[in-house]
Image (tube, rainbow, N blue to C red; front, side, top):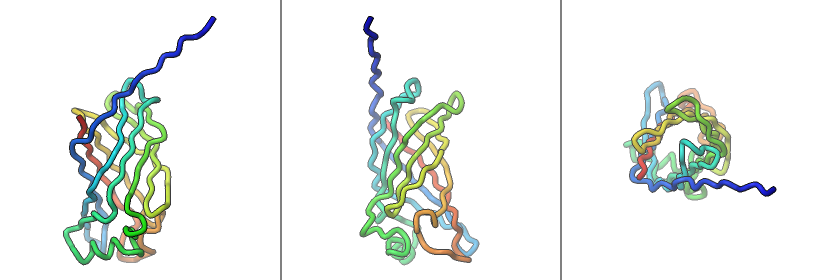
Length: 162
């Protein structure tokens, strides 16, 4: 007796808008910024998470903290080294349901050629993905040890799809 294979086609979503923000303390004051140039491939179906995948990248050179001198410095080799590493990337390796409306994704995040694995909770409501998480900039070689600059950056993603 042969077994019939069941393959589901997971919807591929088109990105309409993206908002990638970060916050980090510098000299005790919060510095906020954005990253632009989001490119992504989103295949997602809450009913078929095992076949879903989320991946995207932003342009390192697009960093904007509303301070041109600081932004220039952040693009240099000490920090993002944007000329050599033009993108910051994120790719899911696993997605599971964590509650009726929320999900937990295991993601590989690559910054400056270094990849680390993160478990990131996210939601998908009204065709918008939302996530917030923290990462340690030192794990990616972004800047050195500092008494002034916090090691932890808070990241917020909002991706609207159609």
